[in-house]
Image 1 (cartoon, rainbow, N blue to C red):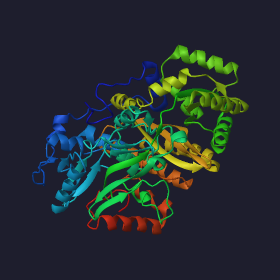
Image 2 (cartoon, rainbow, N blue to C red):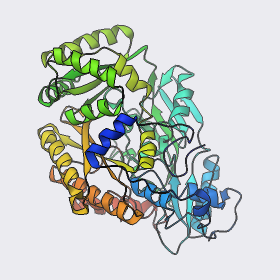
Image 3 (cartoon, rainbow, N blue to C red):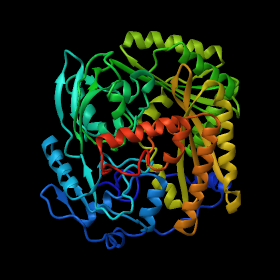
Amino acid sequence: MRRWNGWGDEHTRAQLPASAQEILKGLIGEGTPQENCPFEQVLNQVPASRLPDHKLISKDPGERLRHARGQSLPDWIALRSGMVPVFPDAVAFPAGTDDLRTVLAFALEHEARVIPYGGGTSVAGHINPTPGDSPVLTVSLARMNSLLRLQEENLLATFGAGVAGPDLEAALRAHGYTLGHYPQSFEYSTLGGWVVTRSAGQQSLGFGRIEDMFAGGLMLSPAGDLVLPPLPASSAGPDLRQMVLGSEGRMGILAEVTVRIRKLPDCEQFHALFFPDWDQAKAAVRELSQSRYPLSMMRLSNATETTTNLALAGKEKTVGYLKRFLALRGVHDQGCMLLMGFSDTRRRVKRHRSGALALCKRYDGVHLFQPLGRAWQGNRFRAPYMRNHLWNLGYAVDTVETCVTWDRVDSAVTNLEKNLAGVLEGFGEKAYAFTHLSHFYPSGCSLYTTYMFRIAATPKETLARWQALKATASETILAHAGTISHQHGVGTDHRNYLEAEKSTLGIGAIQQMCQWFDPKGHMNPGKLVE
């Protein structure tokens, strides 16, 4: 059973060791836990639905509550405090494309606003109903989750857009194929959600981003059906797939998605290395990126994140041995950890691994072989569970991510962490921030900064602290010419910053495109653009 007010399965738990809790206490103060509002109490706040009955929709208050918010920190604050301002009037559960057409027609007939709902993992406000006189129909695609067609000769597979990551991979692996898209939300997020938010998986360096995988599909809109044939290539005008990518439900609902697949790799390995300092580590990963070395992933933690992760692991004896070993190899307090992945045939993995490790050795990288890499692989989707535990200890955790060119990486990391650390001084509080690089490109990379702060005595104050942190981070990103979102989409949280990247003329073009497909503004209003 999924948690209604936190991340993941309610039976899966992550624990911070007592020694790590003391470290966190020393960094930002003792945790200030607040009482969570019970499910039944929030349930009693769900108002009567403004929609009539229909066989494909549910007006059950529990379903409406569970589909009311996503996984952003403001969503958590709303759910755990019981202060949820708006609920959908109903939740639709179409089982196929014909059902989806019926549901969309029902919504248009009753002047309802329509919110497409995949896995509910949005951290940018994509699926939240907004206040208004019109009813809100949330459309869950959970039952549209089948493998519809597998074209092995073409290396194409077509799925219902609501298929979740594990089910998609299981269906492909049964035939010897993979998509290779592994966002941290992989266990719950859906293929359709990946497309409409321009998602990037942890192994995007080797497998590509979702725009590299998205070959075509079918989108249902108020103006009609948009069929996107999965052509290998075309020079016949603008690529209409690019309109659907990142559209966030503003034009219509993806019903079917065709993706480019590949054979399962014979061998997959993840290795850990440590570098003496940031400059050498960054130079190594930049050279690997620009030489287009055939790796499936890299993740480089700066010294602060490396130290934090080792300290919060709680394995003091093991970490002590590791630090002494690294010290003998010239890696001390400013050491930075790099995770490196290989996915290919065994022979190619062996050859690529040797070349990549030799390059890293030129920058004094210390190879620790596979144990740390295997540990990361085994826990790669468990990190969000720690948010549940930290919240119960009285700490809030959030992240910001961007992508900048190589010449801006150092200043962006430094100023993001510095500005986040200082922004709560006006509240008499502290924030603690650390960063890693991932999703590498020849011209730059993404920055992923995590920050922690104490929960306040009231939900309003906690939200005010988050708003100050989010605004500071967003302004810092824009000051370094970074994208306001590299992998989490726009939603409502990033909407006001989008014009800096797209320009006024560009925003107008996006608005016109949305209006063409959705003339009366029924589709997910308020998200992406006004």
